[in-house]
Length: 238
Image (cartoon, rainbow, N blue to C red; front, side, top):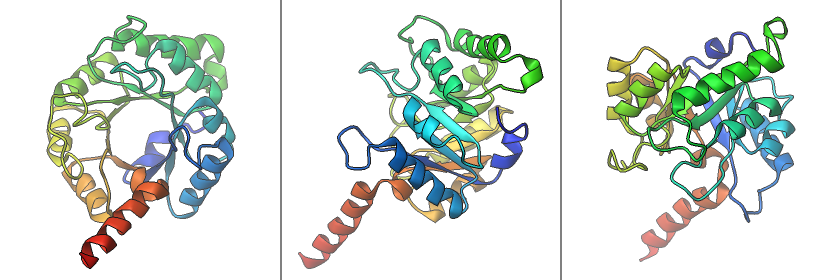
């Protein structure tokens, strides 16, 4: 971990997720690093990046990096195995985001075993004297997920998968109810993520109990942002 005060840096601030899907014009590590740098200039206190190459390309950013590795076609595809998580840590992520649901992981490990494996790798590979470690963010889809993730040893509880696991409805904006429920039940900091499309959404997430807010599509995905405006213009003409 490059920053011993990572959580302090993120508290009450904005994390920006800079990701592009395969086949898109911006799907290039250097481009994502540039987008991330622009977000930092605008006030982002952290950056979320997908893929080993993207994490390495942005290693010099002066803010904590939340790294993940999307892989596979199964339900669990956000840093789905311990092997993926270790690769994300070794690429330089300060926080590794992993699937934090209670669904079966491809390698058969439980969430608690995965988290323990990440910690063991950091201790064995880098040693306490280096200060190299990584916080663990569990991307959850429900209150039960968040409670189990906290018990398993996660450092940050994300609402990333709310509406995508079948346990909660897919809300038009952020799942503010889930944020409130987790805040009432759990003690670990909450990262509100998912369908946060406006500054008002982001502020509401903090008010609901989030420790930090992560915004991706509404800031860093031009194709989607353009489609919103195009739809509005076309609708006004009809």
